Image (cartoon, rainbow, N blue to C red; front, side, top):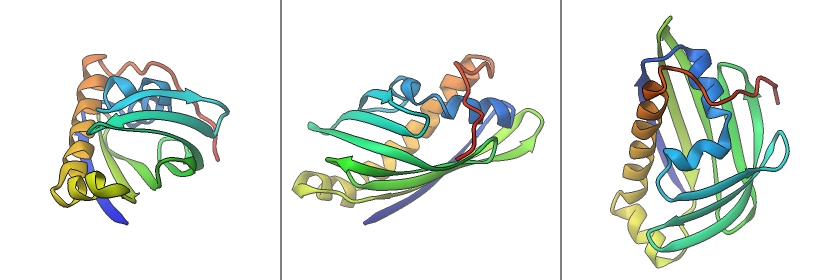
Amino acid sequence: MSKFEESVEVEVPVRAAYDQWTQFETFPRFMDGVERIEQRTDTLTHWVTEIGGVRREFDAVVTEQIPDERVAWTTIEGEARQAGVVTFHRLDETRTKVMLQMDFAPEGLTEQAGDKLGFVKRKVTGDLKRFKSFIEERGGQETGAWRGSV
């Protein structure tokens, strides 16, 4: 199991950063290799990804969600094994630190080699930078919000 921890500071209030992160169906707009996410229930999502020529489909469930603080998940079914948490830290009224911690189990030689070469870590870093650009270019205006707790 590989473990990653990355963070990015975004120039938006914590509520905007958090609210945008709850809009899973927009992830393909800033996550490289994520083709589609379907929100099936408040806590269940279905993912379709293609990364490095490896196509995967899997379901993930939100295991904990606290508005403006954290979203945690784990895969429950399908072709990928991962779990993680994203936390949101208010730096001031207009800036937020978004921290991602993730456990990922690479499968097969291609994924294992990519992991050892730092591909997955670079992908996670890139996804967070693209999230920063996505939310900042919108002027901190999120595409939606889910304020429920899990």
